[in-house]
Length: 314
Ligand SMILES: C[S@@+](CC[C@H](N)C(=O)[O-])C[C@H]1O[C@@H](n2cnc3c(N)ncnc32)[C@H](O)[C@@H]1O
Image 1 (cartoon, rainbow, N blue to C red):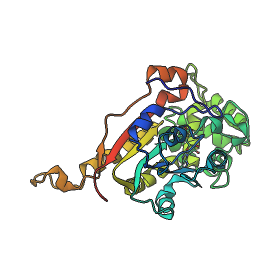
Image 2 (tube, rainbow, N blue to C red; image 1 turned 135 degrees about the vertical axis):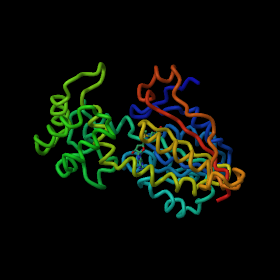
Image 3 (cartoon, rainbow, N blue to C red; image 1 turned 60 degrees about the horizontal axis):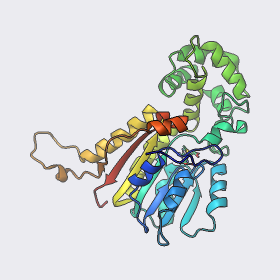
Image 4 (cartoon, rainbow, N blue to C red; image 1 turned 60 degrees about the vertical axis):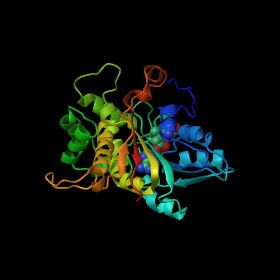
């Protein structure tokens, strides 16, 4: 389906119509957008909710939350929370919504304004202070992280999160350089350590991605939230996740597979599938953006959408 190029601060929501369809929205639905960003998905969801509908939107980025407040504070149907989504259960308990959510969306990773604003320190192409935290008031920024990390751990992070072939060389150059204050300085050192060039790709792309994911503990956040999301859903509720990294997608895929199989049981015992208490059912296959969407939005290239429905009552 062709996406309308709705855009806020340069951010175009990915797979928007597919997400809205997957969330199965009725006028009185209770929907959580756990990654508000610039609200592209929230806006499309709110347009389908009636007076009795509810939304809770979450983002750990203070700018995203400020934008959400500007846009929605007058709307009684929506609550806005600045927090990491790994606090999902506690957040929903505060609103008495745990177990009552009809759809929950995770559109993972970073937003375009986070990448494009040099002062946030995410970008190798806009020079700024090296930070990369989605919430600059929490945890440690990339410059401090690089100073503290052991070289062997940095190699592992670059290999796993960045799939960087030259992880050893890059890690050695980074550690030999000493403290980095700016993204430009880091980009130059990494470019000097990577011996080959991929067409259309800055040589520091993989390293920046890996450091960002480590600094923000992105995989740990997903691992922690998936079981909470399942508890949050009502029976028949939908879990909808857009991943941009193969390791994120693997966590989501395995979670859906394991929760769809239910309890482990010795294979020789004669039990029916429903006796294993499956909690989820996958809905359709993994979906990628259409050619039209890819044409209009480069960020959609690596997006993978997975959807599952809660089948158990608890
Ligand atoms: C890809 S953007 C979402 C874009 C949004 N769907 C839209 O259409 O505008 C991801 C957002 O999720 C937030 N985010 C990522 N990981 C998070 C986490 N663990 N907890 C809370 N927010 C997170 C980021 O700060 C960012 O604003």
